[in-house]
Image 1 (cartoon, rainbow, N blue to C red):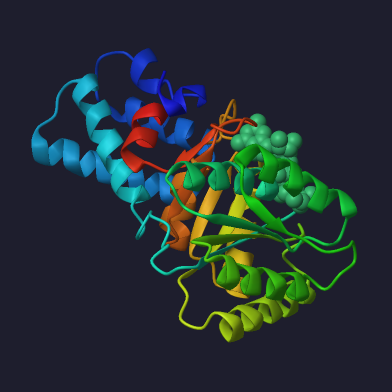
Image 2: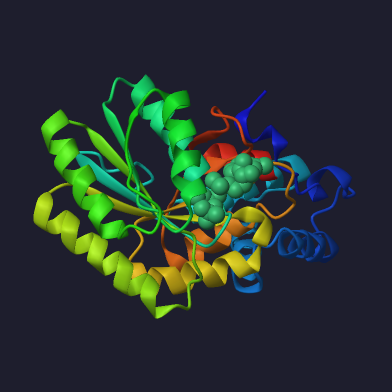
Length: 289
Ligand SMILES: Nc1nc2c(ncn2[C@@H]2O[C@H](COP(=O)(O)OP(=O)(O)OP(=O)(O)O)[C@@H](O)[C@H]2O)c(=O)[nH]1
Ligand SMILES: [Mg+2]
C-alpha cells in the first residue's frame, strides 16, 4: 500500500470516454473544484494541461493522466519541502487553529526524527489547558523523547525559555514546540508568537528555525483562508496537511502551494504514529489523479 492510498481519487480519467474534448476538460475542472483545488488554481492547472497536451501531441486519456500528474506535481513544488534542521539544536514551532492536529503531528514527527537517530525535545507551550501538556506527555512516552512542561496557565514563552535552556544543556538536536490552538484573527496570536520568537532569538541566536502551520485538509477552502491569515501574522515556513485520510478535498494542497507559495512539508493520513510522512509531491499527485 502506498502512503496516499487513503486519499480519495479524482476519478475522471477512469470514468470518461476516450476523447480529449471540451467535455473532458470541463469535467476535469469540475472534479478539481470539488476536490477543493479552488477556482483560480483549477483554471490554471487545466489551462496548463491543455497547453502540454497540444505541445506534446497527446491523444490518449492515459497519456493525459500522466501529463496531469506532472502538472500537479510541478504546482506542488513551492520551495524547499525539507525541514531545515541544520543547527544543533534546531527549533520547530507548530501553530494552527483548534483541533487541526498540532500535538499529534509533533508526536509523529518526534518519533520519526528519533528513529533517524536525532535527540529530540518536546516543549509543551500550550499551557491553555492542563490536558494539552498531558497529551504531549503521552506522545513523548510513545516516541521515546524528553519533554519540558510547566503548570496550566504558565506563560508559554517561559516554557519555551526552559526548553531552550534544556536543549542547550542536554545537547538536543531538535526542539518541537507545541502551541495552543487559536483563531487566526486574534491579535494576541501575533503578540504571543512574537514573544516566543524573541525568547528563541535571545536563547539560541543563529539556530535553524521553522514555523509550521498545521491545517486540517477536511476544512477545505476555509483552510486556505486560515493559511493566508497565519502567513501574514506569523511568517510560516511550511504547512503540515493533516486528515488527508478519507477526505475528498486533497486538492487543497495544490491551492495552498500555488496561492501561498508555501511548501507542504508533511502530510498526515491517520491518528497512528506512522500516519505521517514528509510530503512527496509526485506521490501525492499520482495518488490524487
Ligand atoms: N484521521 C486523522 N485524524 C487526525 C490526524 N491528525 C490528527 N488527528 C486527530 O485529530 C484530533 C485533534 O488532534 P490534536 O493533535 O489534539 O490537535 P491540536 O491541533 O493539537 O488541537 P488543540 O491543541 O486543541 O488546538 C485527534 O483526535 C487526532 O487523533 C490525521 O492525519 N488523520
Ligand atoms: Mg494540541
